[in-house]
Image (tube, rainbow, N blue to C red):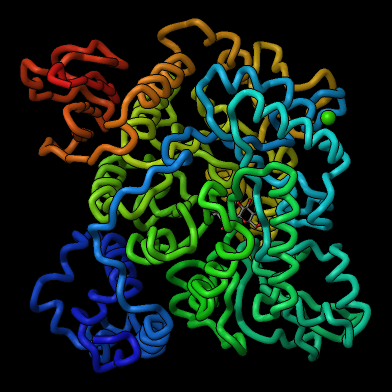
Length: 631
Ligand code: TEU
Ligand code: CA
């Protein structure tokens, strides 16, 4: 049935036929430990939405059902049929490396990484096999959220360098045959941005409508939405007698994309950077840009389930696709300009609506569901079960036919090190890091490495809050303190999830090698043992494993464009093939910390790489890759 005909009387199977409905149902199923196929059970499929509250003992309420129906009605029904032809593109063949500029390389001893520092490390990246660099924000910013709070879209933060340095970096990349992807933060700006300052100073300013201002009283926020960084999503501005919306920190003010002039400003700004030679963009929380008009209150139950209230009104807003189509047509109007959306909360079906080749929106998205086991959040301290990763990727590789392309990543600047989540024991670090790299370089999709991942960098042994710099961590600690949680428990939670694990300086050598001065944030000293210099040339190292797999991927069409064929295997083993024409690879991964039996591949397979013994049963976390001798 068309989405506009969905009501509370609709049945689960109608919901399951709808892209958003199916994503919600499947993720609910995963959360309660059921197979996503559960919804295809005829009995389950026949259940009417209106009876869900009763059936679930009111754990799902009427308002939840209404919110789900309303959301589905805003989403185009049909996901394009599979069978779209495969389109080749440089970014599908590329290995992308994310740089966190503040922590990569300092060139002048002030303890802060900078553009000249990055320039001095380009030969290293080239030798690793990197094709494109994604730079986290380098724009002028008061750095409340480390640059994701932009004060001036057309200036470089002085600490990082100048526009001339930026041009030199672009030239340096291009000379080496590498490309540059910029971070584009357009869901919000800093409160210090000129637009916001003018809007604040003058209610009649044309910039007032660039944001969500609501006049009112200081004790009554306009709605119950909460911020991702704790507390209400509204900040009171006494001088203006008004509230303004901020989904992130209280200095990151949400932009109102309903305003056409704002959209034009953004298009022009993107074009300005493209003229400087930028090859693509990573679009920060881009699925949040369209908010339900009127900003209605969030459903409290949904808020409790996902931890943030109001999200159903903006994670897939009514005009999202329209805005993205405008950006594609006016800002990224070149098929070689890659547009990668960061889209928290988007599932595989909804993802298809964003990245389908027939859609004219984005090229790829970053989702985060694979980073935590169901029912867990980033701030839980637990051992990640890789069996979930296998199920998750098996499903996505199958769901995405030739007309869609996925990103493959484990680490970034917003998450602790994945290697530590899988197994924090130092004796397993190398094997787990190699296993994860194998997944990234042999599945179908574009691998994104985050600085330090290539040496197997692990979480940091921070011991006190004072060592952390991230606004999210400090806000969370304050919130937990206010609600009476004991300090030791607070620190344990913050330590499990803090984004600072990946924001410490890049470990170049045993002395650090990041700065001659005092780094803006200190690591725990693990760089003495885990660093680039130590691993360079050591064929058993995590670094050389990355180099070898990147080279293997580059040499093979099957590993880039080939189909993914998942083979039957025991629960603790993940086994798949990649095939294009006569060329074929077989991958077997031990997902556990114990030896695992392995059905030996047939005589036609030649072992290409093994992170363990390479014959007999798989060692803990061992990864093996074979090539078919027929190919
Ligand atoms: O992140 C968005 C975002 O949703 C994460 O901070 C999220 O809370 C976390 O990843 C959940 O696992 C982007 C940027 O990557 C982040 O650094 C910024 O703080 C944020 O947007 C605001 O710009
Ligand atoms: Ca510096």
